[in-house]
Image: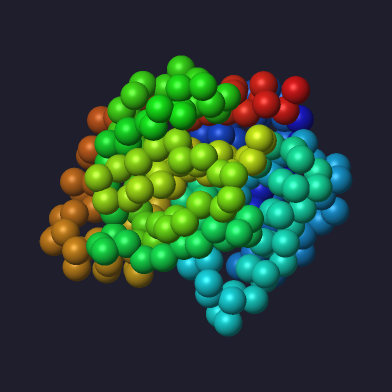
Length: 237
């Protein structure tokens, strides 16, 4: 199994998803867009994983490589028709690349947030075996506002209407961080813009509270991450 990873920040890699793949003897090639990496030929990859990042899907002026990334996502989904998973920004990029729209939330959604599956998730290949309500690490101020034609909404939260979606028969997006590791929240806190935003919104010490709640749920996070990973592997045939 060979997976192409689109990465947009050093602190937002494939996390536990990469751990499961490595244990199975698979490998990843990572395109670090902010390092200036070029997108390789897509044909040799079995899956595409599109990870999170601090930029927005419309930030083409500051991040012109977003145009080429969206084009590659469209090609992987529509022409190659191989499995794709988008996480956080990756979820939004899938929506945008395939004809949907994204827009700002009323206020950012940050913390361990309960996510509710929709009725359509009951028969979805990737969310098979998930509990109807599950906690998920979130840090985003943008949401998928309108799904592309033919996409299916699979999960919601109180303030974000599209927490997960099936964008095509073999393409899925998850707004929250299914790949979270024990050090993830602390790594984000090392990014000054992230920490300043959290302190401004939730007060001093917010990062410690966030990290503690994430740590308390880490066993479940790992179980759900592995379930998503295993279900993706089945989707690859």
